[in-house]
Image (tube, rainbow, N blue to C red; front, side):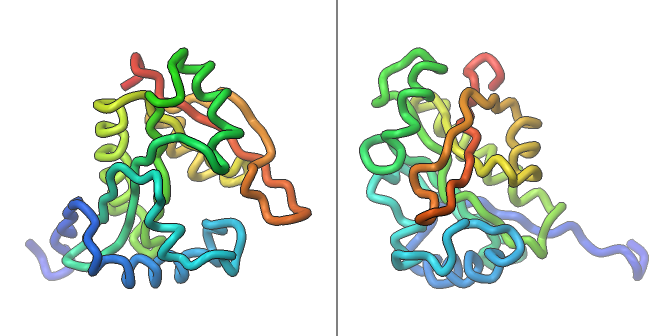
Length: 184
C-alpha cells in the first residue's frame, strides 16, 4: 500500500440499540438541510418517535469505522399515514395489508456517500422484508437520487399521490413503490 492509498472503510450493519438513538438523531438533523429528509422540518414530533415507530418490526444501523452512519427499519403497514397508501401497495402485490413490509426511516450520513452504506442497509432491510412478506416504500417524487437508487435495485413505482403526511398547505407527491418478488 502506498502512502496515498487509504484502507477501505469498515462497514458493519447491526441491529439498532438504545445507545444508537442520540447519534441517529444528530445524524438525521445534520443531513436534513441537504437531503430534505424528513420533508417537514423542524419535525412536529420528537425525532426519537420518528426513528422508532410503533409499527417497527426490525431496525438496523450502519457503522462506518465504528461510528453510527446510517439507519433503516422495516415496519408493518397499518393505520395512520400508511393506510392511505396501503390500497395501492396491496393491489400491486396482490396481497392483504398484513403481508406488506415497509422499508422506513432510511437515511445515511451524506458525507459518506459512495462508501456502500446505503446499499448495504437497503439490502439487509429488503432481504428481511422479502423473507417476511412483500416489500413496499414511499419516496418523495422530486428526490430524484433516492428514486433512482430504488429503481436500480428493482423497485417499481405503482402509484403517485400526495403524501398523507405532507406539511399543512404544502402537498408533496410521493412515489409508492414495491419490490416485486420476481425482481429480488
